[in-house]
Amino acid sequence: MDEHALTARLPDAIAQRVQSVTVKQGRVSLVIDASGFAADRRAGIESAIKDILGEAEGVAEVRVAMMADKAAAPLIIAIGSGKGGVGKSTLTANLAVALQRLGKKIGVVDADVYGPSQPTLFDNKGIKPDADGEKLVPVPSRHNIPVLSMGHLVEAGQALAWRGPMAGNAMAQLVDARWGDAELLLIDLPPGTGDVQLTMLSKFKPAGAVIVSTPQDLALIDAQRAANLFESGNVPIIGLVENMSGYACPSCGEVSNPFGTGGVEAASDATDIPFLGRIPLALDIRRSSDAGDPLAGGDSDAAQPFHAIARHLARWLDTPRSAGES
Image 1: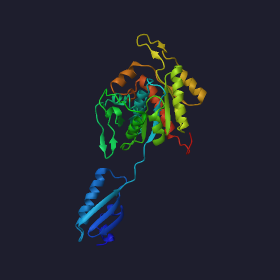
Image 2: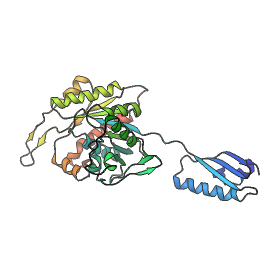
Image 3: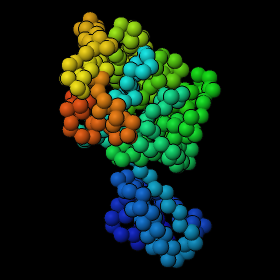
Image 4: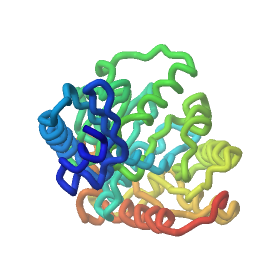
């Protein structure tokens, strides 16, 4: 039986997707366009083809290759700082939840391989990721945001005595995972400008970066180093965020500024880098973070700064830019 006769035996909906048919010594090999089909639908089509063509005279074996459009790699946004302890991980988790609520399909990579925080922030500590071939499958979270962290791969409290290149390779494995339909990855970077950052720039160039700092001068100096690194790699700086900006006393309501105030916005004015907003030093943020339930999942007053920054980021993502524009 020739190729045309074999194709004619198939239902029209399947026959229209046949890209090629070869017949050799009783073996039939088909290539099918399976783009847009879920895995269970592809399996059903393959089974149907084998059943139908297996009944044809002279056919001893049927092989089916399903070809689908390769999923587009998710866009990467780096969340960085030059200094540790400025709240970068908390911002990443809350931005992910806020962006998800705006209709974005988000994944989170915890690239701080020495001090991973995202398993705590998303309340999925102790869950090991599955593997699909040589790639990791991210761990789900209560907000339907997939997360991957070195904290999912090592025992809690285990010290990692890794040299820089090993940390960079670990980060690459987390990014190059099975992210499904995620269209945007937020990467929570470790502090500084070391091997993890350099590996990211060389292997997974971000579409943009958000720089986080507290208001005091020392943190701003380190934040400028982080911004310089991204700019040297031609990665656009989406904007600056001032964290731990003001503390309202829960008893009297008086606002104090233990870390100063306005320093990041002043740096924004001086560098023409957009200022995305400020986040206060608030007990509700700490409590929700410790509980693994990012505050941006709700609409409290304390959640509003995260929602406002997420809207800035969403507008940036939705604004067309020409190739090479920064």
